[in-house]
Length: 473
Ligand code: HEM
Image (tube, rainbow, N blue to C red; front, side):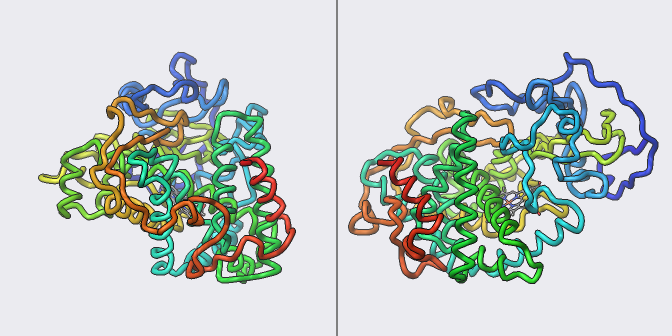
């Protein structure tokens, strides 16, 4: 039997198979159901105490997985694609009929995209995604992000109160990515609405939204084939790896889904930290704590992804004291890894920032590591900086204990972040007229790659937009 020990990043397969007994049901922790109001932070320590570095969990009734709690175990699994696949079709729960990958639940599905691919197929798809992202002009995009932040703030600054998740952190990433697809903001608002429904708990509405999102990306590829421009989709279409239109649509859909919620909750959790931790806020305000270090601190202590699904064991092995069988799912436990006593140290003197916070695993490791970490950090840094520049006297509108976490076992983010501040003036003369606050599709002509929303009269994208506007009345 292969044994994976902490720090064993080069372990190789080759051990005989064995039939490991399943754990006693009393020992298996449910990750579904009600999220405790205070989040799950206490759970990881309790599981570590009971099971060591790896704990048996259930994702749904009867759907088993292993949760990796130790920092080194998580890193080892991420860095060893020859022992742990990313392709969900290798999961025994799928083979034995307990999980239907076509159900569309974001964490328990399979799509023909780079995230679920292994080996040569992964290399082929990733080449197109990485090369397209590398062509993004970061300076121009940074100005575009600032403009979108200003427009979103203009939508609520006069009110003196806002929900910074719903009105700011949630719409921003999808608007940015949508501009990188070369589309006007109205499409971004539509896509944001549809993806929010997918992450909602209403399965029926979720299925319809998945079908609409599918139409959105097919329509986007059709349009870019007809009218290529300086944008991510056109660059993937023209990439030498020769992706089909269908494949490009799936990579574009992944870029949207992979970027949206983590960036939203990185922004939301950073704002929550600033609003609830006076030491951190003081250090940030008097410039002892640069925004990038603030983000590292949040990704270490308040991770937007608490669990990343998943890797699938390609052989039987022992990890810690867990007897893992080929086909078992291993969940990457970011939050628990960052709380592992083996790597967690105290705070740096003065600022309240956790020591070693740059060792966070938030952008993954190994072949699937996030190809857009600089872009993601730039979006989050711009969002935090712009908000702090624009809103004076910002404070939480509820007690910190009243803030509620998302129910997802995977994401660690707030449902809402209500704040109050001194009412201020919009930066543009008519805030209701800005493209991103109104979602009507007009845009700043200086936006990289952005086109008008009626560029190809009557195509699939336009018909979808007409349907969505009808829904909004
Ligand atoms: C704070 C924001 C973000 C975080 C924390 C984050 C984190 C991650 C992580 C952990 C992975 C690895 C998944 C795995 O190993 O299974 C990943 C992959 C990926 N991310 Fe990000 N990401 C962020 C933002 C973005 C953005 C803005 C984009 C694109 C515009 C993006 C595009 C992708 C893509 C395409 C992959 C798949 C790569 C592959 O499978 O080879 N991410 N991200």
